[in-house]
Length: 475
Image 1 (cartoon, rainbow, N blue to C red):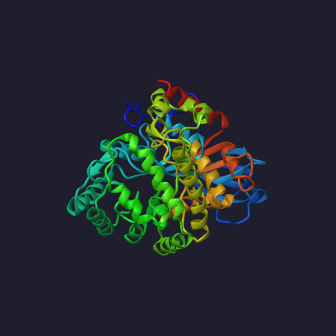
Image 2 (image 1 turned 120 degrees about the vertical axis):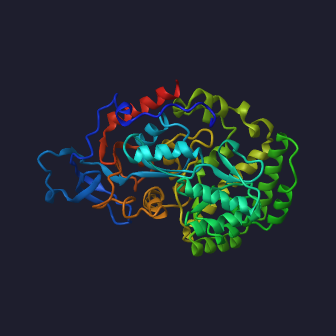
Image 3 (image 1 turned 30 degrees about the vertical axis):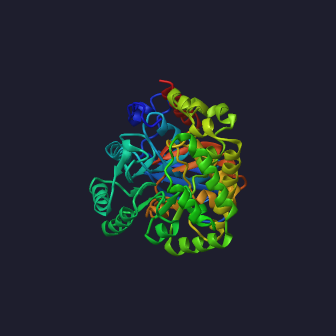
């Protein structure tokens, strides 16, 4: 799905030509009589008015005390709930004509792109920032840094040693990446050199935990975030060494992968130690190592043989090439796996939910991310709401799940003065909901309107964006 021809990006006017044009950001927008959920943990504030001028929240307070200016656009939001715009902190964007409308229509106003083509991503980042392209704010890394035989050769910097690892960090910093992403195949000396050079260059590094690195070592090295709970289950088991020995043995054919993974998962689960996880949790808290569990992608992996994925109505947003690539015939694990493989995969997913809850209760910091664009049956924008539901299933309260997609991304990115909460002076990236998400996290899907950089998109405009995305998927 990553290698299809890229669709042309659309500018703001072209993208919204089929919908009601949003007002210019210089026009005052007034949202009246709504309930504010500012995600700071304060109780919801009913009957509030929020005034937006020049892409920022200028005033807010009780509706009876704030009056709209003469030329303002006034929206009666009685009965609606206002939350900050959402962030998906783990995506892969390969084109914008389809994916950007899907993000915006789902209230996702910011994304952290964790692997792709640097020049292309830089252009999209700059065009969205300058309003030449209508889409979410972007934080990007460009190509991932991997070792010999990279998993994704089309967007990887391959390094073999410490010198090449340092050079990769310098290249990415010099060429405008916001962070460095490390990947599975990195040699040990290259990984530690990257960690050291990233600190010297003052650029964050994050990503997978390479196969030859323990998760505790990654945390101690300053890795800012760990994606997909990489390595945690293996380090929280008494069978860690046996698993590492198995992985050191080369696989001769694809058919050998499923039984090996099944055995690894069995060993991990049989030797699982709550005390070992507690030790890791304490380390993550002390080192401020964030977790991006992407539970929605783990769910897909654990249930890839489930026929219900092929019946998802959201497949209408996936290009035919993706739908074909996602099918059972193209999935190595569906083709070569045994019933035992699926038993272990699903048991491991349940354990991941448990691990997320335990780490969260221990004070470990979390970000909401999906891996859309990197894993089958994930849909830009839509899947973030699924991730929030999985976080609640793992033990988060609804407000804590919301914070993982609003307040916490702003803190992680160093943008708390601009984004993440609803307050005067903050950027006007907002979502109006028809029901209270604190009552049921699924209510984040009940979107009435989205405000993007001060521009108001009502339900009709959002539906037009989704129609455009469906059309783009089928051309």
